Each structure stands twice: as structure tokens, then as C-alpha cells.
Amino acid sequence: MSDPTTKDIPVGSVATNPSQLATTPDASRREPAASSSGTTELAGQSVTALLDHEKKKLETAKQLVIGSLRFVPDFPIPGIKFIDILPIFQNPVAFESLLEVLVLLIRERFGSQLPDVIVGLEARGFLFGPTLALRLDRAFVPVRKKGKMPGACKTVAYKKEYGIDEFQVQEGAIQPGQTCLIVDDIIATGGTAAAAGQLVEISNAKLMGYLFMIEITNLKGKALLGDKPMITLIEHDEEE
Image (tube, rainbow, N blue to C red; front, side):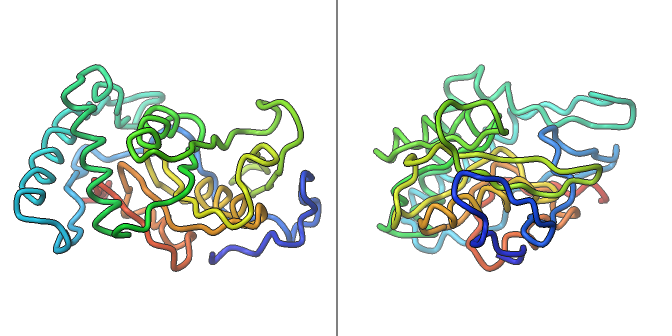
């Protein structure tokens, strides 16, 4: 990770030393603004490891998924164009296509080395993360804001534009040595994803990489994720 390490943060406690905080920009859980001329494209990732019929299936499914997105102007405030992923889940064919695409992309990137745990971020990572984990026959572990889960939790504090926020994972949910793939609907500034990666690391587990439905490319959130592999289905540039 390119962020300051959290290895010195006590287990189950919040970092209080500013040098221990994940120095990331505000990572709002809403999709970021998009200009009226913003463009959305399929992520141009190699599928050379896939068979020809799987490549065709992948591209067809991608088109169905991107066609199911809804762009809502002036929400939640004027000047914001909101990328609404919810119509995907209202259409069983689109939802099935999304899962097929994600499984193919994971296999293309990692081969037979599937993650032990799918780690989903609050809140829209919960929409498809558990189903994806079930499809892969793997565990699902949620990462949530502080105070929303019972029992002892590991905590990472990270900086936002106007303050500090905290992410948590329950103690024992991620076992030492397990490989983890972090999933969420979107990567914008990258702050929450980077914080989730730190939670995996202080659990003494292995961060395998990240998977996002949408990448807002001009916000360059990928830079906060270090050299870990990142899978994206759709790339959206607000400035084109």
C-alpha cells in the first residue's frame, strides 16, 4: 500500500497518532460528480487467459451491465450526476450477467488461485459481495463504519477532507494467513478501499487485490492502493 502503514495500531483499537492514520482524501459513499459530457466505457482489461466463447460471453455480459446503469442528474445535490447501480439488481438477467462477468475477471486475473475471503465495503459492496462469495464458494466478511457491529472489532482510522472516519471488521472474521479480495461498487478517491486494505493487513491476512464495478479514472484513486492488482468492470471519466 502506498498509505502509511497501520501495523503499529493496536488490535481492536483506533489509531490516535496522526502518523498512524491512513492519509486519504474524503471517500464519500455516494458516487462522485460527473460532468454532463462525462463518458463511461468498458474497462479494457486483457482476457487472453479466457477461451473464445468465454471472451464473447464476457463482452456481452459487460454490455448488458453497463446498459442497466442509470445516470441521475442533480442528485443528491445540484451539479452531481449520480451513477445508479440499483437497476442491475432489479433485473435478474443483468444481475446474473454481473456475477458471470466478475467471476470471469477474477479467474482471468488470478487463475485457479481464488481468494479465501470476499471482503465487502459498506454499503453497496453488500449488494453483490455475498452473492459473489457464494458463487465462488468462499466466505464473505463485511467492513463497516465504527459502531455498527457487535463484539470486539479491529479498527482503522483514516483522514477525510473534513475530519477522520473509522472502518471496522469483527475480530476473528478474517483469519491470519487467509487471502482476501476487497470488493465495492466504485472506486473514486480510493480512501475507503485503502482503509479496508489496512484492516486486512492488521488481521495478519494477505491482501490479494481489489475488485470494483466502476472506476472513476480521473480521480486517480488507484494510486492509493499501491501495487495490488485491481479489477474493474467499467471505467468512467468525468472530464471527457
